[in-house]
Image (cartoon, rainbow over all chains, first blue to last red; front, side):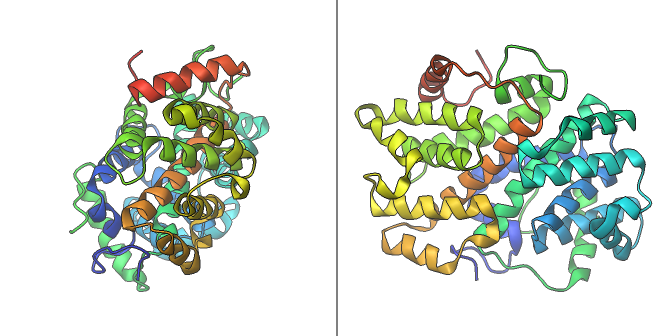
Length: 182
Length: 179
């Protein structure tokens, strides 16, 4: 049971977006601009950053929802996503993405934890200003989404297949016109 | 120097909104509805929560600009703001706002740190669903804004006058990217 009265058929952020559509709209517009609009980082890479930060924040709903979307874009298994979350440095992702995930991991702790060294390393691996900017903002935004979802005690389905099925739908429909009831 | 090349002399989040207007306009829209839209909490109370969380996160730009906005909105009660930021437990606040600030402080640590007991306390002090919802989302949103501003090492003015002007603008014009 969530801490406030939301429709209990709508888990995680869906119940909250249904409770308060006025704040849901700019949050969905932000997600669309960050995760889906034209970008030199692929949708799969951006969803991986979202998934990794949600994993660090121990937010079950967000890490599985976005893990499911990442898995759909990257056409891999959920176990591959799990491996990246747990140890991205020894995963098959590109060196540039590794450097960006390291920045995202620092943002998760605090904005001030990001070092010049980390930014320089990302640049050396080919990251642009836009990519560094978007990585920091994706990581920061998920520090919001995760706190919103867990801070109001929302429920999350335990069955991970639930998220995989929905991941495909979310990837196809996007965030901008998101209807939390579907 | 910021980590990415943004206009010098434009402080904090404004430099980032200029760098990337597509995300900037959604962030300003969120701040406007969250801090100025219809709510059982006054804009002054909501700015206080924003500054309180930013102070906890040691983000000077957000802490000082939203403290200035809160002062401008509290008007004759403006001295309350510094007292809350120094030690909320000693400030002269309603039990409801005190309980909501305790929730905001836990959200700052982690969403999972908010306990059912804290929520009960807030309800006993008169907080309703919307008070609790708005408090959690304001606190969560400033965990984003603070990380965004500091994670890219944007320019943070040190002159208190600069923040007073920002506070006045936020109190009268709200969150708009227009000059």
